[in-house]
Length: 242
Image (cartoon, rainbow, N blue to C red; front, side, top):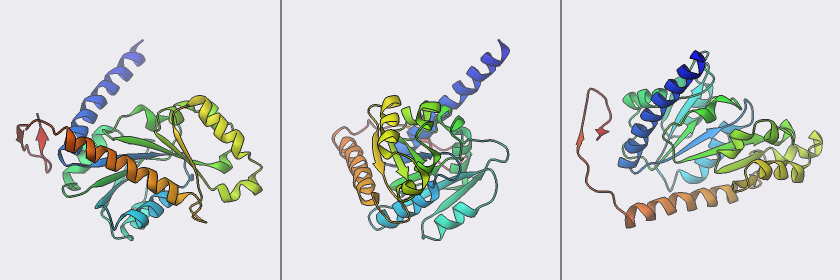
């Protein structure tokens, strides 16, 4: 009984901070994408391919979440976009508090798109709202066709599922048709993109779709502008809105 109560309180606290993050992102006109996956599925490679194709049209920033090292953040920074590392130690996911704290030293003012690369884990990241606009699941096809059924929440809560490493399917003994059916079974409305960061297959389709999502948001903001809000700054580096 006590464990259930503690978990509920933690998630309520997280949701409150996620709402705060979301408001801050909206005030900045930011489109925020939370990338989730198991370790080694290729999130950083997908981000690299995405940034290369979008950085001439959008001002992009990246928050990287890893248990240890700045290896992935260094790869992103090498592309010429700002990157901020959140080192979680033994914690297997990002939460809204970590992202909120990161904004104190990683200003997002002036950016158009913020990508958040979550810690590699097929369970916990989906439990914690970060204030993002969209969740994208990167799934390595070589993990097999069954995992969408075994870990349904990650797929169900993602707006898009990127089936990475399709070039390895002939060597992995995986049926792409079966894998897509299993994703559809747990998440009928998600958009699926089979792709390969190594060969470039499917990347253009993913980028075109993502740009459409961003443009749709921008048009909605233009047609339905928010009422003026009272803003003030606390001791934080970013502005809080009430």
